[in-house]
Amino acid sequence: MLETILLVSTFTIGNITEEGIANKVCGEMSKGDFVIFDSNGGIVDEFLELGNCIYEKGVNSIIIKARSAAAYAASAADKTCYYQDSEVGYHTPHHLIDKTVVELSVGQLREHHAKVSKYLNHWGIDFQTIVNINYSAMMTHPTLMFTLKGDDIKSMVKKSARCEDVIGGGN
Image 1 (cartoon, rainbow, N blue to C red):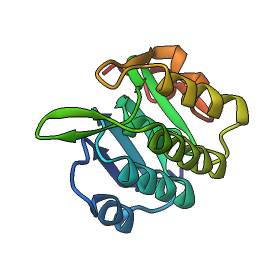
Image 2: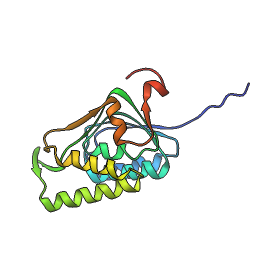
Image 3: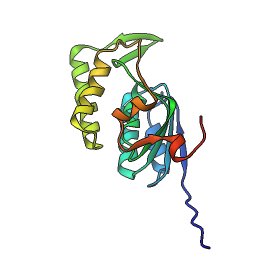
Image 4: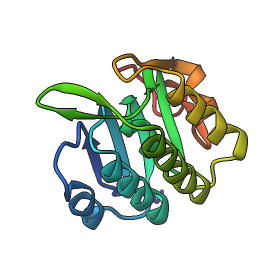
């Protein structure tokens, strides 16, 4: 009997608070690899670049926690699995200056949502889901989090299933 062994890499993505991290991680990724999201977020542009890499290279994801900017990148994966206690969360973007939340201007918010929408569209996210993601972010104060858990995550990602159903075990 011939057995097939599939060798892939797994990358755990936490908070990204430094520029250039997405490019470093992207350089190591290959088609079929897995990204495990366990992140409260970080720099939006870094997560958008990471999401672009995930999409372009056909990387799959496992969501433990993808909040704030990390939630955008989690939408880019070709296939996603999540656990019943996994979380995806959105809120209004903001700057953090000396640990103080500084809200963006209306113009900056428009620019942000237009940019995010462009990436989500490129990654194959349908129009209604893009609207839902942007609305969830716009309507949630920067210091709060609109959180989806378990099966509710399905509405924000492509080709998804519970990890327990496809790889077994719990988290």
